[in-house]
Length: 283
Image (cartoon, rainbow, N blue to C red; front, side, top):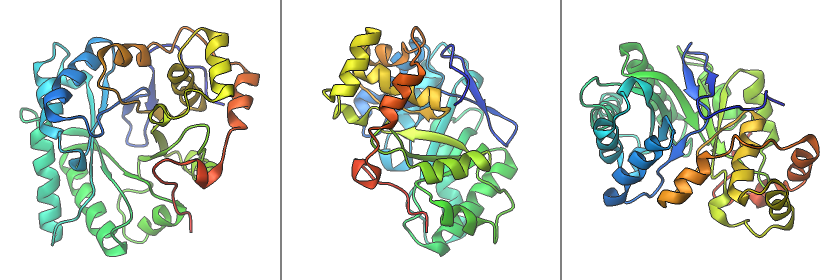
């Protein structure tokens, strides 16, 4: 188990010789008119890591929130992702550059750029990875990685990648979908594991085990789930547009889940059937 997280300023070290704030803030489907306020609230209560994507259609709003914040750009870790490849490698690269400009029009870089999914096929994975490598070489992406990639997809990159392994793999992770095979692989290869849907979109709040632990620690179920991810050594990305929940979800450093608590949550694993989005294909 990873060292027990102590504060919202805790970071993880990537193979790119950079650090990433362990607790992140997700903006999946955060509407444009709400996203700016939510990101500003997140920064206000201490988050320093915001995760967006081209698919979320709110990159410009995340950039606007960071520009308007009193927090310096260099102190905010920004991640985005490319999902749909354009018709050519050059157009894929330009699509990524456009994302960087939306997120950081002044200094023109993002901290992490990911391939959002492996599902567009081997040729597209290669074209997108090489575009990200170009961004990385030019300093427009400090680190590069993947999302929803299984072991086979990451191994496939070896055949052409100049940057290997990817610095990050972002996958669905929570007690009901622990994806142990890919997590173990990533840990072995020093790939940072990010956890999306760490609070299971609030669908498990009434689970008896989870509710019992929340009562024991006088916390919310979501706080227990976020703390679980942190103690696993993952980088969780809880999402909310509610100002109070944004604050509460960051308040996870005043308690520790003991060994029995962690074992109880580990026992909830349901494999692929426990996922609410998807598990990776490790073939």
